[in-house]
Length: 346
Ligand code: SAH
Image (tube, rainbow, N blue to C red; front, side, top):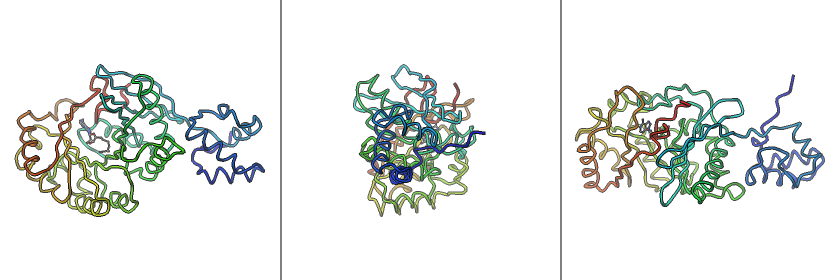
């Protein structure tokens, strides 16, 4: 039986340096290999051309590089690209490239499936299979950056953790991935261009504040009334709005970062004045921005996008209360690449 080799990218730079010293080599060999793994994008040990053949073979017999493979790439009429990404164990996640005139954004997954149960989201129908490792998150970003350069002639400018999964339920790995994405030894991207989107796990929002993270936070709120929110996001029963609000106050007190809320307005669910009143009351404690996102249908019509009068009411009432509001059109709907549509259909 083959012994299980370790994923070399699970090692820190220090651990790699120590490994080489133990092998009777020099510590700086660890730096070289680390550079191949994280900034030069080596897929195999063979790629590491400034490392001797002997050393490469030695690495080969001890480790694997669990690189992702983009199985299929679909391109939408609006230029959005969706990758079906195969992981080393055969599981699939999806990531999306969203180009606009001024930026290209990668939407990446943090888990295979999702343990949350948002009733309007296609991913919630896949059970959570496992967390992604830091290198699997990192690889999705690298793949999209390549596609951005190839098809749109510019590097990736932004990243949103709005693909499959709940990033705060895979917090440590998400943090490690962001560390590689932002460090000069990785991709050197600014953390200000990264948004982590959460359904709202209060304890983890506080942890983020304590960790003084530099990326931005978005909260998928969808309703500021407990009864309504629980009916569409059942886990709200476990993490009610009062707890979420308290965690966000803590976050704001520590970081002074504006909070973004994602919000879909559905017909007969949250399209009345009382819903907007509750939203305004909920976000008053800190500078806030509300993104009204278009609903991307995933089902038999149980959920329907509210009419434009309801959206207009939200916009004018929020603006009157000095809350920044944007109305976001969806992208990539024709290839099931829009928010909430990632469900490995292909
Ligand atoms: N679990 C995280 C990130 C993944 S979802 C979170 O909840 O934030 C990314 C965003 O897409 C969230 O704001 C989510 O509420 C939204 N979304 C999910 N399904 C959707 C759908 N069918 N139409 C529009 N937005 C949807």
